Image (cartoon, rainbow, N blue to C red; front, side, top):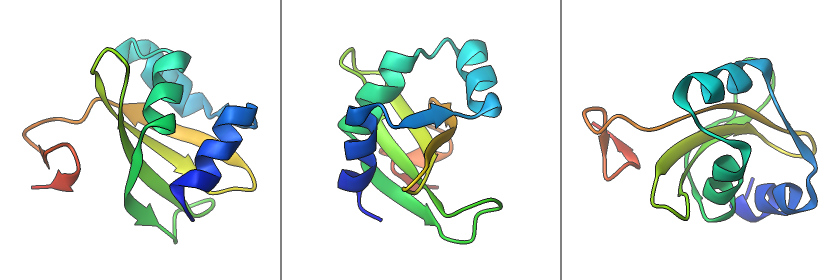
Length: 99
């Protein structure tokens, strides 16, 4: 899967949020526009081809205001935002590489 395929679905509004993602977003005060900004300007940093329900990947991106976000999404044809969070600097080097 390429980031472009995911970004195409985001641009067209052809995606949805899982219940888990919505709960995390509320808890961490992350809004839908920030998730979209991170995805549209982001890059795939990890692939999960054998994920529980369907293949997915972890995307790192920044919002326009400079907020670092990780967004896990399923691969097309059905793009689902599985979870999103601000990466912990204790766990990530440059927000992209696990320590």
